[in-house]
Amino acid sequence: MIFDELDKKMRTYEQSLDQVLLPDMYMVARLDGRGFTKLTKEVCKYETPFDVRFRDIMVNTTKALMNCGFRVIYAFTESDEISLLFDKNEDAFGRKVRKYNSALAGEASAAFSLEQGMVATFDCRMIPLPNAERVEDYFRWRQEDANRNALNAHCYWMLRKEGKSVHAATSELKGKGAAFKNELLFSRGINYDKLPSWQKRGVGLWKEDYEKEGFNPITQESIMAIRSRIHVEYNLPLSDEYGELIRKFV
Image 1: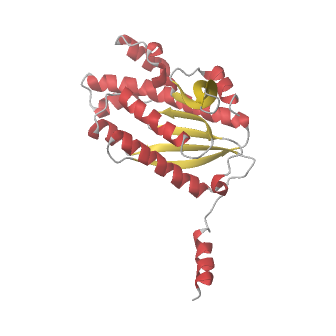
Image 2: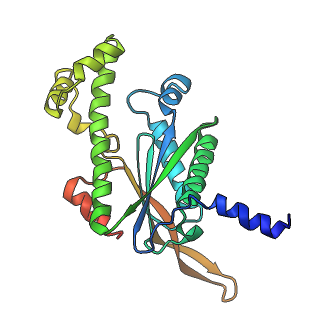
């Protein structure tokens, strides 16, 4: 068979499941660590329920994703999860979903593995959002997820450290609301409201411009140049105030 004919035929199969995100849609990528419960609790033995070392690895992994060739205008990370908001005009790979999923999962897996010193992997899903309102809703949703997970994690690991089994700790918290869990922590001297903000609200990242002194070799003069860097925010606002922050990027 002539190669060109075979090439054309096989590419039809290869591209049969291609999905393209429409050009007028906002794009968000959400990445999750694969098997990270075992990695963090059994293999690396990070402190429970939160460990600054793991947080910093996730932040550095997020930075790597923001610098790997895509126009990411805002990023959010909590636990083993990363969300990336792309510039609305981002058109790399013709906006093919499979390309973003594979490239971003690969970049995140490589960056985290290098930071951690052992192999770890991420999966990725692309999420199309129709307008700025839904973008705001998305990131408020993920922040609320971070808050709920943090409250439950602090309660669960407090009970486990008191000697309760996995089943007993899980059963005690099953079906209980936030008020019960806050009171449970308070009864052990833990004020949930005063715990570190990044544990409850996640961490936000975005690029910002700043001035840096440079030197012009032609004029032999010092000059101020505009450079870009990634700002890491460990004290994100909540609710409507957080929504206002997100709207600045869309």
